[in-house]
Image 1 (cartoon, one colour):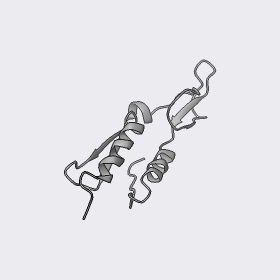
Image 2 (spheres, rainbow, N blue to C red):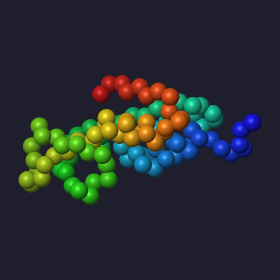
Image 3 (tube, helix red, strand yellow):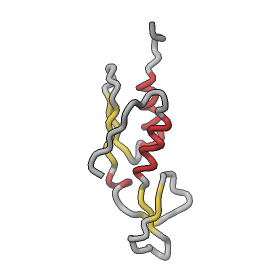
Image 4 (tube, rainbow, N blue to C red):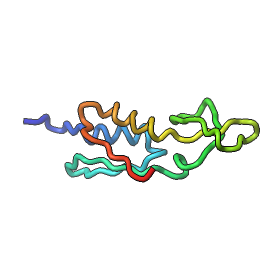
Length: 101
């Protein structure tokens, strides 16, 4: 028997939205589904931006992009974010499929 009101998928989903809500549009079946799907927000995860230490996202250098006002450019580090999502879901996440990088 399960614990009434205990829904680890919805708790995990809430955490993911809290952390990655600006960069990922996340979906799941609130009526008991166990699959979570996500789409990258192209405004956040799709283009180089000037690097700033205050950025609250996992970024990686974008050496191919021209600096802006002498500031190096950075890209959203999608691979690292996927690894963070897997780590956060340890014991819950069974599989991750990344399509169309």
